[in-house]
Amino acid sequence: MELAADYAELIEDLQRLNGEARIVDMATHLGTSHVTVVGKLNRLVRDGIVRRQRHRAVFLTDEGKRLAAQARERHATVRSVLLAIGCPPEIAERDAEGIEHHISPETLAAFGRFLRQRAGDGDGTR
Image 1 (cartoon, rainbow, N blue to C red):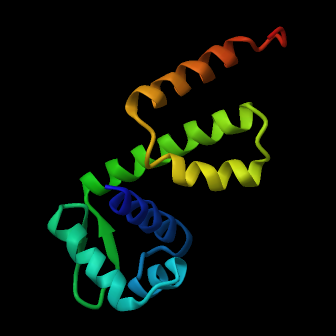
Image 2 (image 1 turned 30 degrees about the horizontal axis):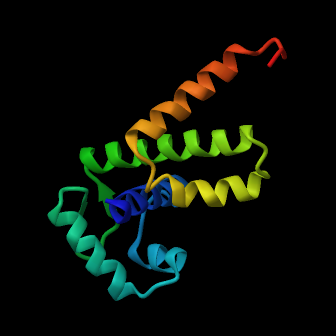
């Protein structure tokens, strides 16, 4: 599911930046070949994550949009915890990208509780 989440996020990013997600842009961003991206997209079509038409841009299905939103939320939570414990922003961003795919639901929930508790300490007395 890691691959599907990464592709779903990338497709959303490209649509936001360029108005569409093209295979050539995905290949450039991922540093891989056009053929590799097409192969991965074919699996995502089979799994109901994306839809595509020959010689057209790639689109997320509702399931793909849900997957991208979940991945972004996991990433933001992990990044926020890393920043809260003092990691530099560029390292927190990079590490969150890897951790978000391997974090258990229980740990993610604990991270959320930590962040909510920390936000409740907004008076500066920790």
